[in-house]
Length: 137
Image (cartoon, rainbow, N blue to C red):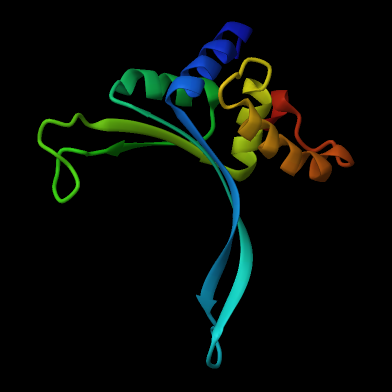
């Protein structure tokens, strides 16, 4: 990926993207016996949705991580027939960390959340030197 591509994707992401970085309590039923089990879970996601399929496919191709899915907003019960279909690119957890490291120098609007994701993973990778951006993909 070139610097120009990274800066362009960061701009697209600042305008059309969404970053989630939060911890919540997940309640699951125990496999054996009565009761439930509560665990702390991190939700770390990055996503971008728009009506232009080619742009989303290009972002996915350049970044090399995540998934692309169509969101059909034209169908009931929540959609309207005059809504356009949206294409969504999404990545989670370590893939999100990889993307954050690429976009960090160029991000503006989403910079705080991007830095939170980087700070979340940096202690894990600082001693091991596990994530090399060139070799990650």
